[in-house]
Length: 240
Ligand SMILES: Cc1cc2nc3c(=O)[nH]c(=O)nc-3n(C[C@H](O)[C@H](O)[C@H](O)COP(=O)(O)OP(=O)(O)OC[C@H]3O[C@@H](n4cnc5c(N)ncnc54)[C@H](O)[C@@H]3O)c2cc1C
Image (cartoon, rainbow, N blue to C red; front, side, top):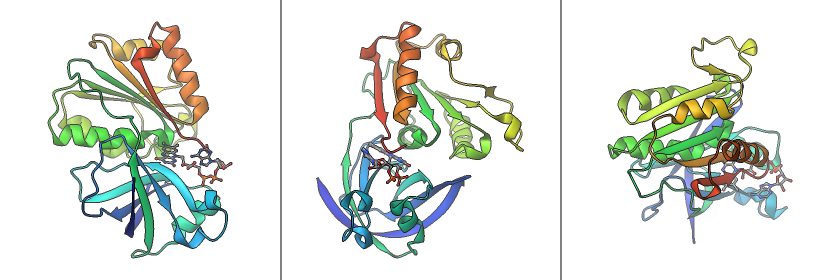
């Protein structure tokens, strides 16, 4: 695995409490949508090594010229240091790695289930699928508390408009605390919702990404509606 010195280009807010960080893409850096990388902040390396390095899924598609990650901004040593970096600062990126990539059998549908920031690897997969005009059925169940908290929601809605094979099902758990309009699903993702979402899909493969507790709960729900573990792929975001 390679380590690269790259410049931070910019950061921006992509939802309440969630920021995206855009880095230069080093020449020769190739990755598959769904893969991750480590961000190492040189300013922290002299201290606790765990604080200097964090893993993030790549949000951008390989077709894009920059490398983008996104994260919930918490009051941690790493995230405070990342947020404080001015544009032009140099950080280290190590990667790519990970095998949460889209299956090759295009006849089988993909069902992505994301909780909150677990959306990141699916963004890369969905953007690249749109770019490649992939004729593969892709369904995303995207759970958040409110639309305000849902990173990349507008971009996902736009991707759905542009790709007839992609269906977005947003699910909001706490609309009573929202001041935004929402016409989609409310509550939690449960077996009934998943059964409605997969009606008519051909032999789906399921992808679960999010905090470990959410991934485990979703796996149990899928098993309860008869989905075999062989058809479930997961990525757990340790640290949440
Ligand atoms: C493959 C993968 C992809 C990820 N993608 C994203 C992403 O796209 N966006 C995002 O926000 N987060 C992602 N994460 C989680 C991310 O690496 C951080 O752990 C998380 O953001 C919490 O960091 P923090 O600075 O808020 O908390 P911290 O205070 O730094 O960490 C909280 C606790 O978790 C522990 N911890 C941190 N990282 C790990 C780890 N990798 N394994 C085991 N324990 C750990 C720490 O030791 C600490 O006890 C991903 C993790 C993995 C493994």
